[in-house]
Image 1: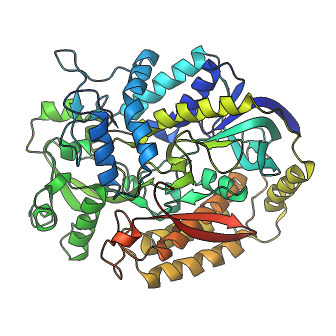
Image 2: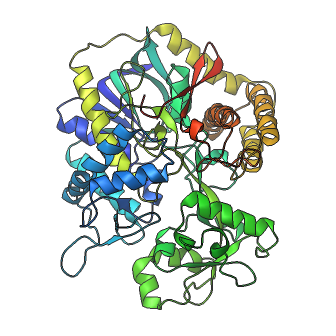
Length: 550
């Protein structure tokens, strides 16, 4: 097996991972950036509406922090939120330096718009394709700095010695070669786990890899029950189901109506209407369809056909193009939309500098928890990845200055090689896609927008059965170096591990708060203004309840 040595290994090449690698390189440390995708093609590029930042008066970082805490139902970590909101303006200026051309007004000020809960506009954008433009700027900067990058690489295990990170084990997906990385520190920036749901806005690469890697080495996960469903995903045709329709549409005059033409949000949130919080709008749409007021495609209508076409093309050209490609001119006809799994608010428990409870392990972006609490405000995701990508890099560099390289334990690498080879050598005929399909159905039906004890317990037992089946997944042997079936086996295992933590925490939280809505415990309870922490100890998931700022 090939062994590669570096100071810091960054796993995940989206917005947070790229920003981390850039900072490490600028700080003078040796770094390797790994991504499952071709450079620049990570899920971050699919972000549409923009990123929150207090750049234009009267908005301030204090106001940004206040609405982030309110939006998260006060189980966010206040120290982390403070660091995020205070540093975000500087990160916008970094991105401009990297070449990102944010929208500006005729007077030269940043163009900002107000999303839900934003009394003052905070959202900085590039049309409705902000993520794509941000990724281009980050990639360009990484190339200028000659950051070493390995694309199409799958990390399957973190290597430790006495609970200290010493590297990682992975597979070059293009060649099939197994590789050991020896490093002083690892920064996880692997994104979320949306692919474990039947309907999602997420890219195919979001398979919970970072959560599973962290659990395996004893990392604590926090708020895993808090899964965000974006209220407006495409509902038709089936091939486009779940594709994101940015919140910017509703923030710029979009109107939701049921099949009768009724503007139904006034029944649920008459003050906020379409600009209620994401969890609130998602539940409202769900209830309309459940009451038989949905379209033939089990959806509701989102109208912008009352706006001038020029405004539609200026404000959300990508959304216009998405529907035009399926035969709908949204300047003349309404869109059909339905909630889609969108974001994991929970994740690896970090401090305000991206540190974890494992020496040498840092995390940033969607894989990390603590910023969003029970509900993420639109515009806070790709933003916080920039702040904590940089912060985790600074922490990792400081850590590396104090430690030397430790040789990975051979037995760990050998065991991981045996685990991976077992999928290829398996004699049964259990294809990974069958287990993945079952998992998606379980999570969508029983661990979705509304939950209850009966459904959650069934989900828990169903996933336990799938884990037993997954031990006998078979990766078909290919005459090509790349074995897609083998990658599927590894990803399905990670999704199953992640799903277990979501269900475990959801069963424990006996209240409704933010994205976690229990029909059997419909009230938000003061004594549950707490976080649930999940960790794997001796092969079993353990939970504890902690104060948000502990």
